[in-house]
Length: 111
Image (cartoon, rainbow, N blue to C red; front, side, top):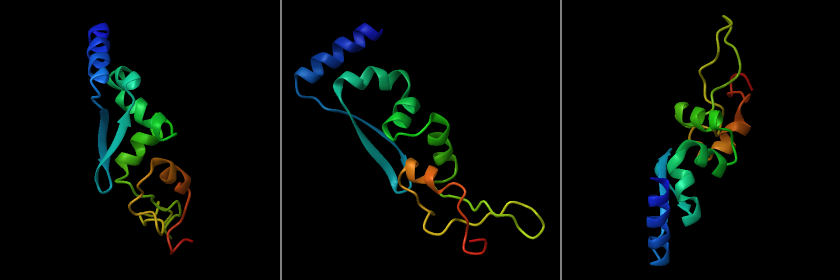
């Protein structure tokens, strides 16, 4: 199957057909261009490919999506429970790398 796909991709690329992938993003969908030589690698592991594209680990890429693209405060409430506040300025993080950098941040109450 991979050889068949490679042949199709090659033929389409020779005809100037472009390739891209989309993924969920805080503002709807993001589009990532795919060089023709990367299409098969993307098809085999879309999450791994996108994590590499954004220069984060697979786990961080998935966590960015699961978080709803926001960074939660790392502080604790007076009762010792994790704060559920959002770190200032990180409520709609458009890049998984920025989301990773924001981890450990604190909300305005715990700042």
